[in-house]
Every structure is written in C-alpha cells, then in structure tokens.
Length: 371
Image (cartoon, rainbow, N blue to C red):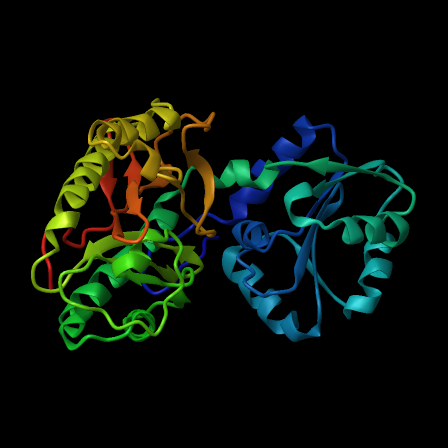
C-alpha cells in the first residue's frame, strides 16, 4: 500500500523498512533505534512530534505517547507499514522498550546525529541495559538521498506555492513594508495557497541587511533602489521547498548592479554544471569561478547548496568540501551569493532535480526584474 496526499502521486513508504533492514544487516547490527523525526516520518508516514521507531528481529515497533495513539495507527495504516504501535507515557517508555528486547539482540544501533549524550546514557541504563549500544551515521539518511516520484511531486508543489506567493505579493514592496511585515505576508500567503507552513524561518533582508546571509527580518522599512534578499520556502506533506530571489523597487542602485550580474552568472553556471555523476564540489567550483573572476571571491562566504527533502538541509552537500557525487533523483539547491558589508548583498537560489542529462528547476520565479 502507498500513501497519497491531496492528489499528489503516491509514495511507496511501506518498502522503505525492508530497504532499511538490508542496510542494518550490512552493519552487523541486531536492531536499530530510529529517533530522528524526519527519519521516523520517512519510514512510517507518522508525522507526530514524539515517536521512536524500534527495528527489531521480530518486527518493527513505533513507540509513542497517548497524544498520538489514534494518529499513529491511522498514518501507519495509510502508509501500509508493517509495524506495531506501542503507546506509553514518556516515564514508562524505557520499561516498554526493555521488554521488547529478545535474547538474540546483542548490538543495537543509535542514530548519532539524533541522540544526545543524556539520552544515550538513559538508554544504556534503562532501555537496553544488557546490550551493546553503538553509534550509527546516515543509515536512514542514505535511503533518503534519492527522491522518488511522490517525494519530488511534493517538493515541486511546495516550490510552486512559494513561486505564486512571491508573485502575488511583489507589488506590496512599493508600499515600503518592513522586512518583518513582508516576511509575515509571504508566510500567510503560502499557507493560504495550501502550504502546511513555511519550511524555515523566512529571510527578508533589505539594504545593508542584505549583506548578512541569514539576517532575521527586522522593523526596517524597505526602500527604493536597494537589494532585498528574500529566502523562503513552503512545506507540503512534510516536504520542503527553498528559493532565494534578490528583488528591488524601481531601479537597483548602480553600485549593486555588477554584483547582481555576477551572482546571476554564477548561479547559471552552477545550475549548468549539475548532472548525475558530477562531483558536488565541481558545482561549487563552477559558481566560485565566476564570482572570483568578478573580484568578489572572498565575499562568497557560504557553500553553494544542499539537499532538500523532509529537512530543509540534508544530504548531499554542494560545497567545496563535499565528497558527494550527484545522482539522478537528488534534489539540491544552487545558491551563490556576494555580500558587501555596509552596502548590501545578492543571493539567487533555485531548487533543482538532478537527471542523467543535467537537471530541471522546481523554483521558477523570475530573477531578472524589479517589482
């Protein structure tokens, strides 16, 4: 059975647990505890805020609390997942988990990226007192890298919602809203158009604030002629979109026009470099080469991009230090930027789907004109 939402193509969620079991067996683990929220959702369809998935020799158990008893059962059934739901208050979950461990379980994997030191200590003492606990890295995330048709459709719908929201609101920039007002308007408009919510905290950075890559929207009014970096995304059925556009009112200040041209050329070069089999670091180099030739190599201060899916930042990394090679079905961003402190900055970002021949964009808002 598959899971369908809002007319979107189905996702074969039920098959993912079997794929995970094969990966776990290859790591010489007897069991795995999946605690990352996005990983639990990927494997089961369960979207609650409290759930731990236990992959055991005798079956799979989703351990949650009473708030999610009905939701968990409904979502697992809709996904066709062969897993049992155990419901217990947080104070009793250790006892429940310990009771599920059978004698053949000697080594249990914990997700290193999602388990704190305190939680590991509690699990060693109370959840799994007689077994060896080992750290695992990227076991589930490795499955999540390549997106299926249903996942890409959800990201695409989120991207379309964001595109349409920006198009609907661009004229409001003429009224000199504050950064905070415009950010809020975008989030409300995305929600009105069907988004579950924003995929991350919306960035609206105007004038000198646009030189801060992750500026938080302030009460500064947006003025004519200055760059306005708008970095935002929607979320649909758990999946994120991500897009940045640099916009302006009236005519862009002459001092920023060469920066805009360099970043636009850099972003186009990066997108052109994306294809299955290409090293992710090569995409980064393609972007940096253009900006370096324009004289701003030291003002491109972040990586070129990242994977997008259930998390807004996930593998593969698109950066100079990345060891990843792009594969068909990866969904990544290409987002070079130049930031000139005290003056302003420009960033342009698309989310693209990697194909054998290259890539295609999911974000399509115009990049080359003002309001």
